[in-house]
Image 1: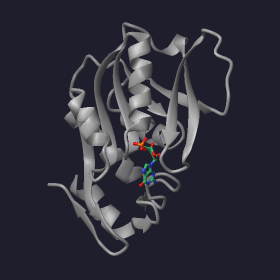
Image 2: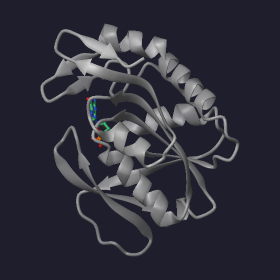
Image 3: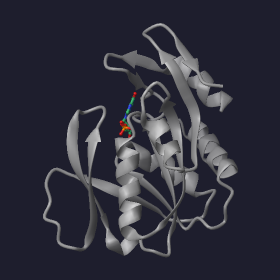
Length: 190
Ligand code: 5GP
């Protein structure tokens, strides 16, 4: 998505540890006009009318998923990160290692909001090692729901997540795939 790539080049900054900061337009301050175009682009890439739900994970995925959902006319449900939990049978549960915080989170989703009849599109801001996305896929599997695909705003193509997800046969669409990233230069996969 050309508009997004241009914005990453203009306003993205690279931090130590292979972290791309896009917090002036995507995940702290949010450029709603840009995210609206992102939402339209996800709809263009996932035209299926089977999708019943958009699933994301807190926090940064939520705003993007909500704007995208206006083009799908389905609810957004987000997995919650909890420091520690008592699993009481009312929630789906998995563990996710955070790439940016280097911490393992318990992640939960109420069973009320996802079941075997659902066809799910996952949306998230970044794909790096794939832990967040694999965690969401675990939850979908636990619910017996059907995965329709995963839409990612920025995939860091030099990390393993994209490859793992594609090898699992998931329809993955990333709107910008970064091939290389240094303090002074960024290249995208065509
Ligand atoms: P993964 O689980 O694929 O390793 O990492 C995905 C999650 O980590 C995303 O939900 C995102 O919040 C965060 N993340 C991973 N890499 C980056 C990055 O380079 N920049 C930012 N801002 N977040 C990242």
